[in-house]
Image (cartoon, rainbow, N blue to C red):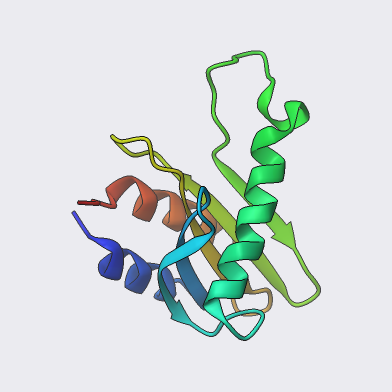
Length: 127
């Protein structure tokens, strides 16, 4: 089972990956990052990712469903030349972590990247 470095390396191995970060959205800090940052600094990207995640988590539109026990799984943002995939990570402790992948739209495959990111998040071991 991979740790943070292996998880980020696995994310960067996804075709079209431009960057990967593990973000604590309760604090807005990047616990680890690889690749280029979409905004120049990984810390800024982590803070902006946190803003988006908090907005989604606090929204009844996205969190109220037929099964009220289903947490958010991921957020996908489509931009001009890229995708941003944000995958929520389940942990044994009360942590609020997401895996953020910045994916080139021409060389990446959104569906494949989403499933690969899900597998990486499930296998991630923290501690």
